[in-house]
Amino acid sequence: MASNGQEALDWLPPLNRADVVLMDIQMPIIDGNTAVSRLRASGKFDTLPVVGLTGGAMLSEREKSLQAGMNGYLTKPWDPDQMIRVIHGLVDQVKSKVTDQNTLQA
Image (cartoon, rainbow, N blue to C red; front, side, top):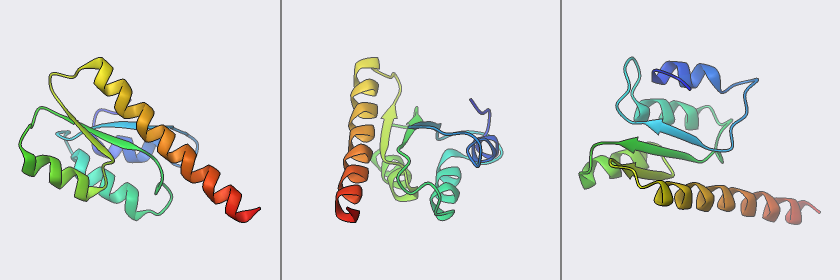
């Protein structure tokens, strides 16, 4: 758990591994969109699923987050079942890509 975007970026590499990141969009120091943009720019976390979490329900906010590199976007109030479906779907996509890449290399 990180209390701001910089802590999130510092936490991930190189020792910590995550299967999915739930990223608050409105964090202090570095917001979630900036943090995920930097995460993607590093080239080390291209396949890491990142779900943006926010109270902002405007379509323009969603689009901005997806353009920044979020794979999903959930707004308050969060429906736990929807959150689980989104996370499972994203993790399954990554597993499928890894399986496809391993098949191509074999």
